[in-house]
Amino acid sequence: MSLIPHVIVIGAGSTGSATAHDLALRGLRVTVLERGEIASGTTGRNHCLLHSGGRYCVNDKEGAIECIRENLILRRIMPHALELNDGLFVAVSDEDLAFKETFLAGCAECHIPAREIPVRQALEIEPFVNPDIRAAVQVPDGVFEPWRFCASFLATAIKNGAAVRNFTEVKDFIFQGHTVTGVTVLDHRTGETETLGADMVVNATGAWAGIIAAMAEVDVPVVPTAGVMVTIGERFNNMVINRMHLPHDGDIVVPIRNTSIIGTTSWRVTSPDAIEIPREQIDSMRQAGELLMPILKAGRQRGIMAVARPLISKANADARAFSRTFEAYNHRSQGAAGLVTISGGKTTTARGMAEKVSDIVCGELGIDAPCKTRTTPLVSYREFYN
Ligand SMILES: Cc1cc2nc3c(=O)[nH]c(=O)nc-3n(C[C@H](O)[C@H](O)[C@H](O)COP(=O)(O)OP(=O)(O)OC[C@H]3O[C@@H](n4cnc5c(N)ncnc54)[C@H](O)[C@@H]3O)c2cc1C
Image (tube, rainbow, N blue to C red; front, side, top):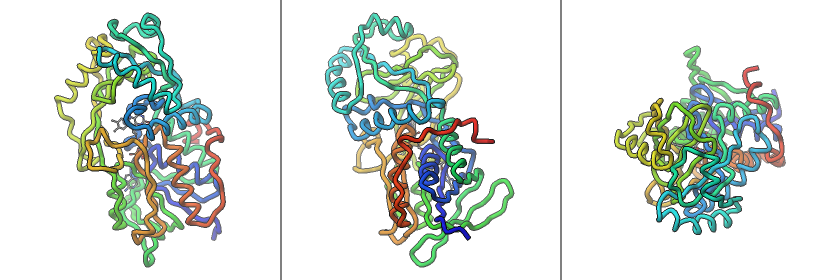
């Protein structure tokens, strides 16, 4: 029997994958349990924006600072999973133009490198942007490929001894007194149920975190908040094109591979598994996207998708007003020692989320092993299935 503590990580989205890597790098035995394919939750269907933080630098400074810090780290550790194409924030109205100084001040306050470029230069770089823009500011946005993002973290974790079991759904927790000592799982490939023991369990199930926590009779204040994205089957921009105003519906066009994705909206849902897409949201988003890039009107609509964000409810506010920051919860104080939850945040901040929850896991296990993920390059996603 191994003396190295065993940690189960539930969920193989960006958060669980980064957590598996962090814990394995600190020398722990790690098993990742994912009910579907990796990145089959919110991560696999998001907007793919490596945030510079520009979108949040005025109304959510905490989230913006996390984004730029992690953006710069990811550029170093996973260059193979990123397209470093930068972003442009453009003013398309007088109100947007009046917002420019506030925006630039927000970027400066959050340490986001931002520089205004002449409109003529912006239109030379991005000829399909609305020709009537009044101002343009360049920021270090980028694009990630979600599956490659997760697979890079997981491949590196596997290299360091972790095991990844996909199509394995956690159905319940095993308790000894007030301590979680393992989980019951259903293997969807074999149809068999089994129990797995663990010294600690990390709930990294994003918008499902509240459902998983309820299995252990503890609470996490995660509000599943859906967003719709419309994919146009042609790529018209090289940089990410954002509207220069507070985040709103349909105010960003992200180029990924040979498509352009317009997004996104924000409304609360009761279940992340059953999201109905309101027709009017698609129409209003297309209109808002076409204001940024009129050529999108001529583009073929290739797909519509909706997924739920795991937003942390800190106030009884409108979902757009929730911070995009993240939280870790040690459930020892709620009568479930051995169980921790990490949720909220963004794919861009997954590494930082992993660091936070892994610090708690190591503290609970009495292990003195510092986080090394800021400087450790990840192996290529290509090694995941080797
Ligand atoms: C519309 C939209 C656009 C977004 N765009 C961006 C963006 O451009 N850039 C960015 O950085 N962030 C973006 N985000 C935020 C980002 O997608 C999420 O914060 C992030 O993907 C959450 O990752 P996660 O690993 O915590 O959750 P998930 O990716 O959802 O992973 C949780 C996993 O847990 C699994 N799971 C659930 N229940 C069980 C169970 N019982 N047993 C085993 N496994 C289970 C699920 O299958 C899932 O794979 C966007 C979010 C939305 C909604």
